[in-house]
Image 1 (cartoon, rainbow, N blue to C red):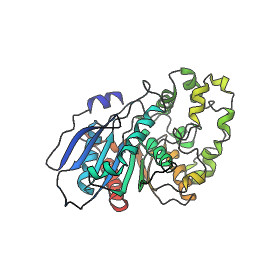
Image 2: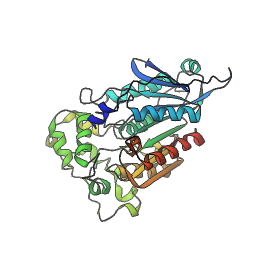
Image 3: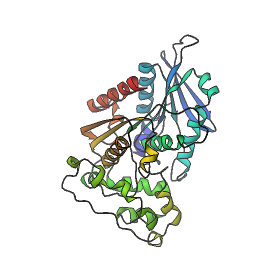
Amino acid sequence: MYFITVVERVVPVSDEHVQVTEEKFDGVEVLLYQPKQKGSDTELRKAVIYLHGGGWCLGSSRMSPYDLLARKIVTELNAVVISVEYRLAPAHHFPLPYEDVYRVVKHFLQKRVMAQYSVDPGHIAVSGDSAGGNLAAAVSQQLQKEPGQQIQLKAQALLYPVLQALDLNTPSYQQNQDMPILPRTLMVRFWSEYFTSNKALFRAMMANTHNSPESSSLLKFVNWSAFLPESYHGKYNYSAPAVVGVEGVGMDGPSRSITNPRASPLLVPDSTLQSLPKAYILTCEYDVLRDDGLMYATRLRGAGVEVTHEHYDTGFHGALLFNMWPTDFLIARRMTDNYVRWLKENL
């Protein structure tokens, strides 16, 4: 993934249809994509705030697949796209990447800023893939709790998102533990590095023995036997993760972070989910994170939120990025087209 991040890094430039500029929103670097075609003085545009993936440790808004995706959204929706270059772990542990993203969203949702970019306050979405989907879900939850927040998001689009750190032995984690691109070991490493550089947490997470008495009361929110459609249970039987004392992990601070919904958006009651914006959730069969997305779709629907869930039986984690030669895969084009179509129809 690091190799891909470096090799596919580009300097986004304007073209005949899209104007690209580098900006700072409340001190956070963003790439701003706008249609070059000027509308009338009264025409307002839709906007998508996009958060790249990479396990909070890798990735960049400057990677060519993200640049290509942003341009497609701009041209097909006549929309403004804000692609966020948030800080990365392990140099910047949780909650810093989340806080960068939240600052960008809060800054953009000011009336004067939206007016500057001719954006309609009623047609703004937050979206992201993988770890970016995690950040998008967390921001959506936090924003609707914000006192005095007048402008809310209309939609959230989560592409194979990672949504919980309490149970790392769901059926999809077990079924796809050796799957290329994102094997279980790498995803567990991303989680542990997001919280701390202490390897004790990584070892505990690998054994699924990282839960403390504090987190045990939240395991009900990620009980896959209750929230995962039976067809996805496969040959696996539910066994609740072991609960040990914090001293067993040796990490008091990271242990508290694991239970924070800003890191694990699945760990909230239905009362928090009820007022969230409509959601698009993409999941892939060959992905350790499949069940995170499936459980969130189930819980959102149960709370009364409008959800569009698209599952790809032949999909794999990161497939959306394989949209350029020499890895221009048909499934990436299908995913992109369906995702952009949903934005066009729902934003």
